[in-house]
Length: 164
Image 1 (cartoon, helix red, strand yellow):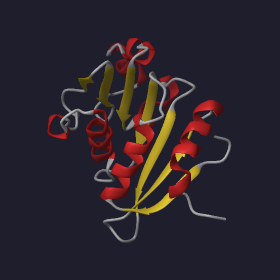
Image 2 (cartoon, helix red, strand yellow; image 1 turned 45 degrees about the horizontal axis):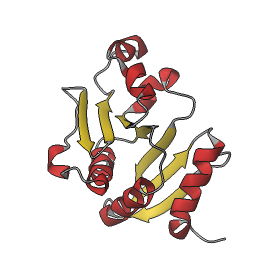
Image 3 (tube, rainbow, N blue to C red; image 1 turned 90 degrees about the horizontal axis):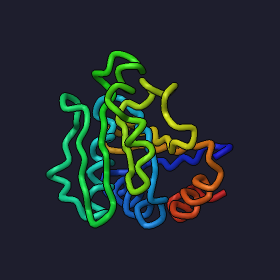
């Protein structure tokens, strides 16, 4: 995505709508780097993705202390990681994340991914969630260097993007 795709003034239902739209079109293998301050909605977004693929969202909690949770729905696997407590990129790699990145039927979603950006796959879809002045609203920004993935995301979210 040469220019970032930004969607503003989203509430929780809007985050769920984004997740549902993306689930219908994302490739079978994907790494999603989630960025945002504490309470921005990173885990809520992972729960929305999980719900959209048929995983009980109640089973999806922040893996801050466990570092990794994996969920399965049909033949789709969701690996949910949290890099907040990871000391550095070497420690993150020691978790075996490269195997997760290469899993052909898995989405690997990493909260606080900006802390390990140097070891993230080049084709990562980055999603930054920012709290707006009105605290129940969010701005979501997508970016990726994978042009094919950028087109998929833009097509899926076209109706939610501001016109003009």
